[in-house]
Length: 476
Ligand code: F0G
Image 1: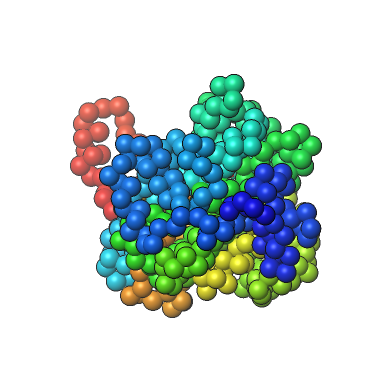
Image 2 (image 1 turned 30 degrees about the vertical axis):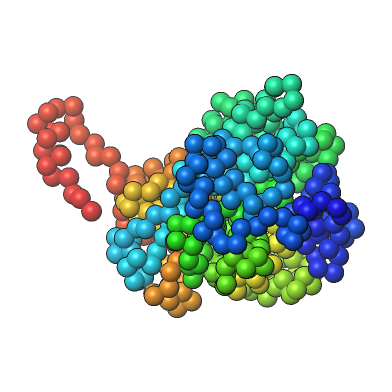
């Protein structure tokens, strides 16, 4: 390998390397996942993270303004002229009042990395900036993804704005499961001109099909199985550090679905440590929804570990086979999904091995939270002025649980990642506030009334009644 950036199999006993242009996201030699790897000795790396602060002085340059590319020295797989940006990553680390959230953390110890501020409304834009850079560099004209909403909205937006050689936009094909996409997000994909293929199946089925169809038709995959997506998502961690004055927090808490963020965050800190840019990484907590808890099941109950790369595939195979049998039994009872947090309703996370590696590198833990916990937390976050989707609120629900279990200490500094905007799954939010709440596995009624329910009040069309109703409104 002569280039300073290349692809490398993550399995240490294989570590086969490939050109960046390799078509397949899997190792041809052993089937392992591929990383974007760098020969840092041949690349200009800043001596300290403070270097990146200088980019603010030149932020009229789109690349210096981008929350991804202003860190370009840490994801140096393309030259400056090739980089694609639509203004992603303009986030500010938020510091909500822990008392307002009712969290037993010392004041000032909680931070929320709100990725809903991205152009398409979720963290996906960080990854798309990088993956579209690679697609254009490779001269690819058609891109595809499986999605429950955010990936498709982001991909469609970037495709609409990324011009290829003859100045046409890229063509984007979205795979969605029947009834398994959030409408607001589908609306974005449709408006931005992506074509949608709806198949009878869930996200995992779409993921399988998009891979098969891409191989056959030469579509460029934009899911997080694409290693360049993860390069872009590393920058979420750089911005967290930036928000903390380059101090490393004690914990990062993130929802886990396909485990792309889990993988990217681990890689970010493994590299920063290798480069001497941080001394110690934070610990990582990955939060599953109870209804789609594969990662938790594998790690907590079946003892799966990265084990220096020797992770036990038999444990995974057995878990998936059992899961499939159970899903077959449940299919009729659960037509709408396994959790209200649609973005993490994923049972076969494609990035599993990379996520296991992250857990080992960041001394990570995994936990699972119920839909009721997610919905209460989402309403609390909303009261703090941040609108996030159910999957994002899983991170706060996970934090509450880990504090209660004593895994996270009240004096520790914690950053929860709010992955997407409130406009995903609004039906769930309205259902929560109006008492038409669905909970775990959607078919069971909620066991307790919603704590922050805030539904509309019915009043006759009469000024007297309206004023009386307003004066007597209860405020929680
Ligand atoms: N949070 C949000 C808002 C998401 O949209 C997703 C994934 C996740 C968390 C899970 O992240 O895969 O890095 O563990 N959304 C996919 C989609 C499924 O289609 O938009 P992960």
